[in-house]
Image 1: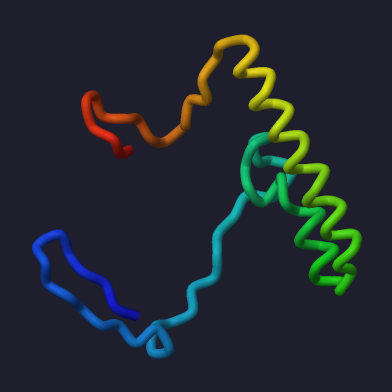
Image 2: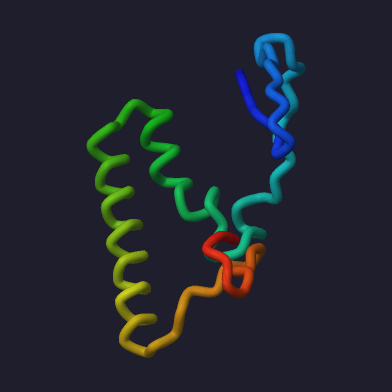
Length: 94
């Protein structure tokens, strides 16, 4: 994998040589309602079981729900507020 520092220096990392680190996650029932693993748990389960049609249906329902929430925010004139990022004034990035 190649990446470039902001200084312009480029580095190569052989990811095959990196140690595997297990994820440390809270149980799904203790996660917030918008946390990714909680939201996508049914899609993931269906994929692990090899049930693509069911995974697709779960994904479709989840995305439609998110679209509906966005439409409601737009109707209420309430912008989405990211939890961990803030937009810098007069800059076009987070």
